[in-house]
Amino acid sequence: MTRIKKARTPGRIGARKENRETAEQGRERKRKARRKGLTPGSRHNVGGDNQGGKASKAPKDPRLGSRKPVALVQEDATRDTVAAAKAVAPVKVRKLTPEQELDALENDDRLNTLLDRVEAGDKLSKDDKVWLDRTLARHQQLLEQLGLLDDEDEDDAEPGDDLWDRFMDAELDPAQYRDEEDKS
Image (cartoon, rainbow, N blue to C red; front, side, top):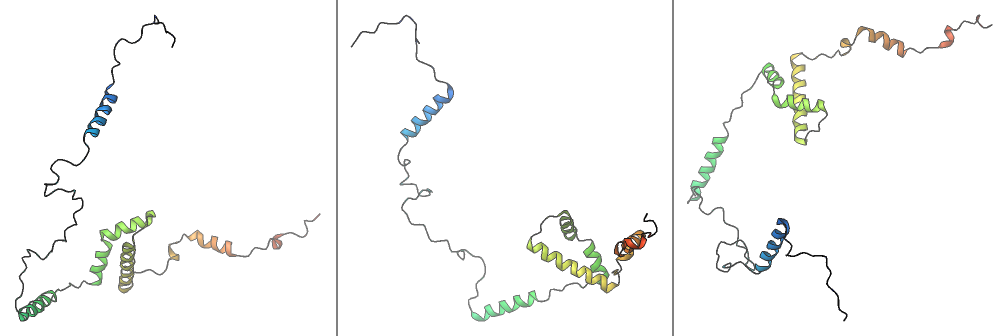
């Protein structure tokens, strides 16, 4: 091998100092390399989450620890179910007059919000559509029952519209307005 002379340009004198990010990454790599294998004491931890090869336990019985009284004789059980059915039966629904029902429908917040959403062009869920259709049908039925429904929608139109409609519907023959004598 041939001899290489020293250059006179000075190089770095000391070791290069690492910046914080690379030093932190290096320490993290070192820490991960050191921590191989299972965590200490995992074999003896009873409540540990990592139960490698163990089979999962059977689901817990929800009846265990129930405080509901259990009938020991069959007669008591049938008597309790009949009594419970009788207790549910006398639920009374208050009957409203058509005027009160119509007033309640017109002041219903859910109906108003759904109608606003429909006008805005939003899509409604299936349940909301069904509910809205039923409610609007009941509203229409109440209006007819009370005689508040107006069947004449044409009266609301402007008076000039009728003349315009007649003009647009008329069949115009331009030949009838032509002067035969003006042909020169």
